Image 1 (cartoon, rainbow, N blue to C red):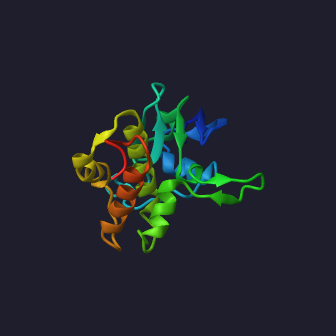
Image 2 (image 1 turned 90 degrees about the vertical axis):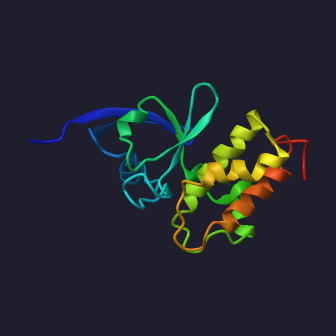
Image 3 (image 1 turned 90 degrees about the horizontal axis):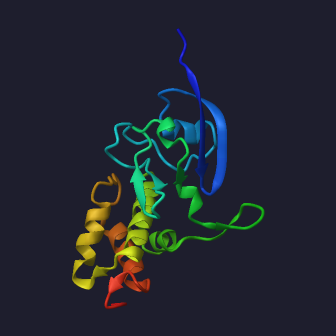
Length: 184
């Protein structure tokens, strides 16, 4: 008995991918790693708990959401648009990083990570939060609660969470339009 293959086509980081024949039941993280060589998302627990594996799903209505790729089959993404952690930094024509996203830069400046294994998930979660706040700004007195809600399900085994939260708060408070009433 062999595993059946089905064609898969989707958009990853703004580029059309496929159709590629992909085994039914293959998890998206394995597709990203083995078929398109995007290894930034991490396989942590393999059960969808730690969220080191999350990618961003861009919905047709313009919203975005985190999707756990270790428990979501690749074929779920048929015809959809996703972003991985590799999509955030700006690159030159040679593919070299020339500018980090505001979230990535803040994580560096706050020394938010130690081993970095969980960082791709935190980058994607914080990016989804910032995109949400661009559509629906939060009251200044709800910023910390909102950040906690956005990052709370992500697990970091090394450093605790304070620096991640501080970095995200800095980005949220200093990006015009995300907080009702403006900058702190």
